[in-house]
Length: 335
Image (tube, rainbow, N blue to C red; front, side, top):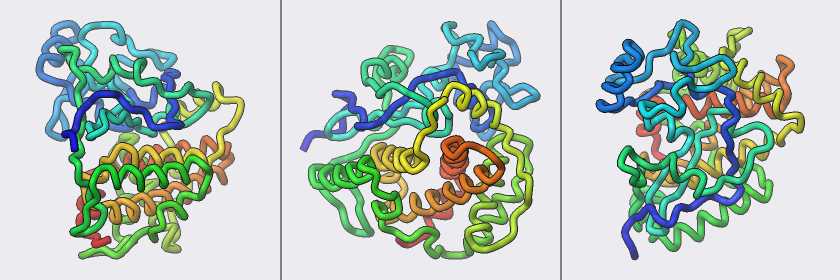
């Protein structure tokens, strides 16, 4: 069996994306970085004070509204064509995973440019420039070896895994319900706590940034799914980006297809394989899918269109899934 490699570049069937300038990715919905040392020097030479250090990394400085200082009115980047624009910005929302078959291109679903409207089929040749480093070489985010962890102490060789995965992805693309494909109950027990405790901790995140508001919504979902009352009128500071996305999307998408597309990408990118076996990934994705359904239903009840409601819910559950506390929690699950 060959070692992990980056060529050929591989795109999951059904994946679609085009940047429409909705602008959410250029805000404190996540950290605006990392910015590498050479990039920081170039930025500070031309735009003094444009970077800062937080969470142990250098990032672009956000303005008082939480938007990147280079984000212009209308959702465009002031330094998009400038040589000092960080590679992180050029790369978003893509990631690249080296596998024995080649480089799998994945996408984040936090931006409505990925989830809403009529988007063209993802094309490897179009994406490739975004995946290159400063020297023009393809740069991987992860690599997967020939053996894939399926359960505790159980691995599949790459060919066998790929065949099993193809069945799951085919079922998702055919419209089968996400829960039936994952076939794993959400919110399994974990050592040292309960899901209500997790929900309360998330709901109490009061930092003034979009990421923290997403944590609050995620916490409400966990509490609501366990029958607890939740705070009314949670703000959605990302709404302006989804307003723009809805304005360019006269034909609504099917929320079920949006949720399935997100799960399919999560499986395809194989990032779960670096946290534990596939049995754990099934339970974790089932948990976030249940949270997404709860959040989407609540946003829809506030008057939002169903596809927009699901798109905002995917933003929330994808963000919470990136946090260290979430990863630490799942390290205590024995699925």
